[in-house]
Every structure is written in C-alpha cells, then in structure tokens.
Length: 470
Image (cartoon, rainbow, N blue to C red; front, top):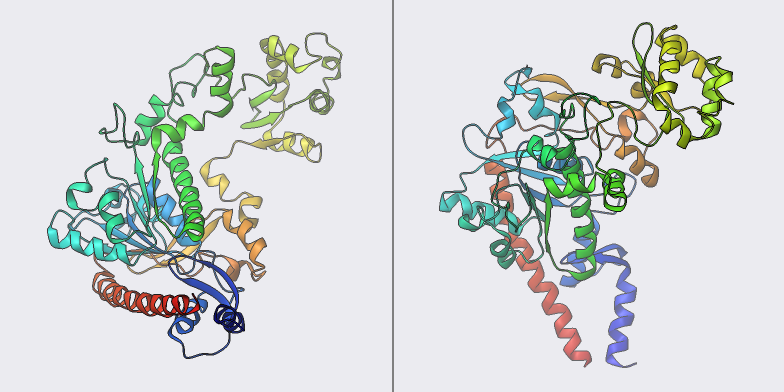
C-alpha cells in the first residue's frame, strides 16, 4: 500500500464522520489514539456528542458590543439558541436602556431585561488602549463580533473589521448601522423612529384621514435584529465551508425598506403612491378592524368564497349577489358602501358573540387585544410565550419568549416536557457591570494560548504526513 493510501486508511479508522470545520475539525466519533491531531478532534467532538441535549449554537462564542434594541435582540436570539454571549458595556451607565423606565424591576429597567437574557456582562473602556487590547484578545477567542457604532468609530480604537480580521481572520464581524457603511448618510446615528420615518413605514401607518403614526413597537429595530441574526447564522455556515470570516452590514434603513415588500412593489411597478389605510387593506375588502358593541375585532375575506361565508354568518346574504360586491376588485371599488353596511351589523353584537359565530368558519378573525388580554389569551399561554426567570438582584422576572424555539425543537427531537424543552430555560441576565469580567478575561487568555498550541500540533501533524505521502 502506498504511503498516501496508508494515511487515508488510518484516518478512516480513527475518524468516523468528519462533519465540517470552523478553524478545526468537529467529529462525531473516532477511535482512541494518542496522536495530537486526534486528541484535538476528540476535544471538539465533545461539544456535539450529546445531540439530544445540545443547542444549535453550543460552542459558538459571540462578542457583543451592541446597545439598545436591534443588536441586543439579535444576540438574545443567538443566546437562546446556545451561543455564549459576552456583552461589553461602557463603565458607569452601561447600555442606555438600563435607565429607560419606568417600569423598573429592582434597579434594572424592564426594557433592558426584555432583550438581554443569557448574556455575560463585562465593562470595558474601549477608548483606553488597555481596554481596546482586552476586546482584541476576546475577539481572538470568539466566533462572532457584533457592534452597532457609527462606521469608522471602532476603527479609531483598533476594533474595526480591518483591524480585527488581522488578528482573528476567522471572525464573523457584523455591523448594525443606521444607513450602511458608505453613502451620503453613513456617518449619521441611526434610531428606530428616524429610520421608520425615512423608510416610508411611518408615512403609510395611521388613520386614513390623519397624520403619519409610528408603530407601537420598534419594528425597524426588531426587523434589523432578525436580519442580523439570520446573516450571522449564514456567515457561520459559510465559514464552515471556506474557513474564512466575513464582514456583514445590517442597517436600519435598508432593513425597513426591504420590509415594505408589496407596498414597494406596487409603487415600483404601478407608479402609484401608497397611502394610509388605518387598519384596512388597500387591495382587499373587507380586511380590517370593526367596532363591536363592546370592543373591536378584525376579519379578513381574501377571496369571494370567504366573503360569501362572512355574509352568511352576519345574515347579510343579499350582499352575495349584489353586483357592487361580487368580486374583490368590485368590493375595493365600492369599499365605502360595503364597509358602511358591515360596520352597522358588527355594532349589534359583542366581540365575544361575533367570535363564537365565526368559530370554525375558516375565516381569519380575532379580537383586538390589550397587552393585558394578550397574556391571558389561551393560545399565548399554550404556546409558552412567557419566560419566568430568576434575576440575581431583581428576583423573579418575566420576559417574552418567542416561537422560533418551537420550530427548532421539532428538528432536534428534544424532550416533550414544556419546561425542559425550552432552549432558554437555564437563563441568566447581566446584573452588574464587569460581573463576569475577571473570569472571562482569564478564560480567554488561557483559551487563546491553548488554541494556538492545538493549532500548531494539528498543523504539524497533518503537514508532516502530507509531505511524507508526497
């Protein structure tokens, strides 16, 4: 047998099922051996050996320099999926949202707590050369670096993408900005409401005859956080194929313009300026809220069959054959006439009475809930959308969970018990500045040195065998 064949044969015996690499190999199993390379492989395999208990991002380390909402929302999702998040805050006030209240839970604002679970906290003055050095050392030991500073600001501290990639070429570097890395506005600070206004979302939101209105939640920030989370996941997958890091830019303006979706397409292809419709829809009638005897509900009839069903439930069967309302196109043209009739009928019964009549009809419908009503909604309770946690200083707190974990649980075949199957069940929240500072800095110094040592062993082992085989 030729030397090359002997090496391949030996590797096949020792390594069963190499699954990929992120700067090193990760294996499912292999025979015991004393070789440095296989010792390294065995160490990495321990991270994925117990699939039933593993979270999707176990072993992934994220250095989080973001503040407020978009970035922290993205890293919270990564944390819930198993990533280790090292949240870096400025000494003193820390993340601005720590003081955004009331309400406060202990000394922390509920706003801050809502998006900062499962994170370790350190405080670093990055303007100080020693502080900048700490961040650089942390970056070497992390897989992801995420920040939301104005472009160029971190470069002045030696922490921009170009500087970090020199010392950590494997890094997935994600920047969250207001407007992008270049262009006429790239140096402006970005806030949700401003991007919401400039992207057109505020222009199309509000009553038909009223002023533009900001949505009740920071949708632009949250959408950008979701885009950033998805881009980071894709970056990690791409790195597993190439072994190289990358720079990702997610900006508020682009994210919200992308979310204009069909509204943007209507203008770009039809030339018609969008308008505010209140709760109604510009292209579907009826699809909006209606006032009942004691509240509000929303129904939607997206096709002629659904409209016919609504008419039967409301005992307005004469509308089915009315030439003004026979198709959706005609209903849109005669919107005001139809809505006047429907509104009068909806006002005759309570919301619960209408909900009971609509149950099982196949029509999309639901009440307009207050926030208090949301968390007493049976489906919300069933879906487990509230996460109860023990905070180190504030005691027991509750934060909103999200259903992405349900999607992932079905893939992982995790335990069926509601309490144990949640990825975020064992949660922690940063309770003070530099709470994990000394521990993390010590760990990073040791791990960086250990990784360098392992990499030298790994490289020398395979390079030696490669040249021997040639």
